[in-house]
Image (tube, rainbow, N blue to C red):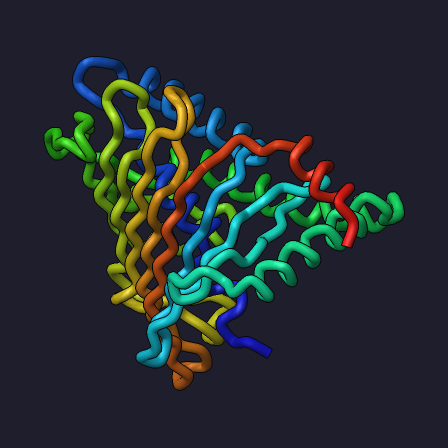
Length: 279
């Protein structure tokens, strides 16, 4: 049993944090900024399943330094990760052939699964996405925002906001509880109301499962996004420094960094063609 399960911040959890970017600017009323920000985030969320991308995951837990890069695909309603590089080195021809075979076999498997198997697989994926989206909306009431000027982020003007937990806020679920012990700094793109960059850190211990586990100060996040098309923005980097305890004695300290690149519209025709090549 992993005592940190359920309390360790995840990529989905960090998406919750960036929702605090729906603050306000002097030129528009707060409600209008919120409306536009929610609409922009909703566009990204709805568009995401139609895109493929490369995800490089660097894990430095225990002093190690390794990475793997996957091409993330949507196949028959849920994601599939195809390994394309290890430690920034391309796979050997033999490894590439093995990964291609695995992909073809997975496509066949998903196309031929029973209705109940498909429903279970797709429902799990959709449940995670829906939870993330619902939690994003929860952030509207979780933070107080203070304008902190403007800055240029990757050549684009952005509003800067300081975000602190709103006094009296009562979390609606366990995931939202962590927001009561965090503060953040947000960069909101002025022309699109997209979140360009987010920094957040835990400023006091936050307990989960009663006394069993807690996230400690020293836990921090950085997420950066950039436009993929004119109206759609996706992540380009996610960095997490995790500091947590379980049962008061077991420590979990880890630094993870994921980068995202090479976004491409998902081509079902390409996947169908790959499926038809045979082993």
